[in-house]
Length: 384
Image (tube, rainbow, N blue to C red; front, side):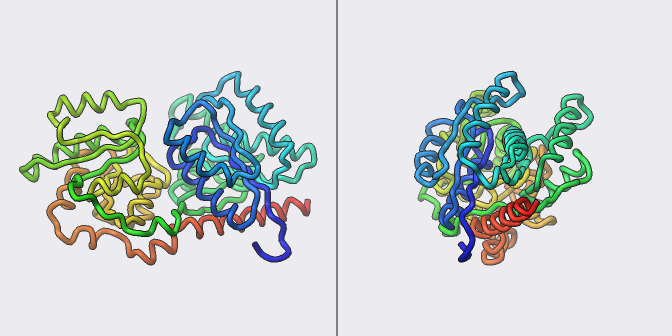
């Protein structure tokens, strides 16, 4: 911390403690706590499993402003009003300098509570990071128009929007409208310790899928592309799918119907670096993303990545990278997977230079930029 500056009191608000948003918040907590700031979390109490509880146990000692867990439904419900009021009372007692909302529901909580505090003369900065979220809605549908109009309305109560990639900022302007408040792009990053290569286990598989088991992330396309890759190469291959989600049983049936049940193994969620050791190549077949952490984590661990051309992924791998496939197209994904298996220099040719990659996508760089933004906003608010 710079001499003469006081520590900030920062609270992160989000709904579900799973996936990339949870990872993003944990990294910010660790970096900012190490820099001497006071940090807390507000999130849903009804989601997350044993893996997430272990992550909370690890980070809880760093949450000097506490861990607040309340029921927060995915869809809008009357119970939201009670959750909002209880959250307001608790957060008011903590007197934060910064409320940072992540995802649609987190953004609502941070901005409404922050605005209520501002009415009561508390000088708190209100930030919102969409992380995809409401930007996945279709403007052509009534539900999409309602959600996106609400995003526009809430912009009036936002001191800064924070996007994880240029793609996300462009998507926001396309769907919500020209930004009328401050905005900044700050790329996701991973810890310095994660830039150590992960050595594959002796009997590792050819391909790894790791993530939520739901269609948005493309597990069905991975299974389809894996079968096509086998047929193109002409001999059996192996794969591992790591994760939990609502469609797990359906993917099991899909593998069985295609005769792939013995060559694709499903495992429960585990730390990413543990999963990386299970296969040579990481496949990210998502239909839509903002800036997926799993791509950054895999590259930092020295793993070759095959991904779909969605969200900010081209900003990581390069806009013209042959490692990128058409989203939702298992044939094109299989083409890249075949190339990875048959071209001995594929990894070296496709992946970004390690030093340049680390300079942009480290957690320390991300946290430093975020802290500078927090300082700028709180300084501006104190002069109002």
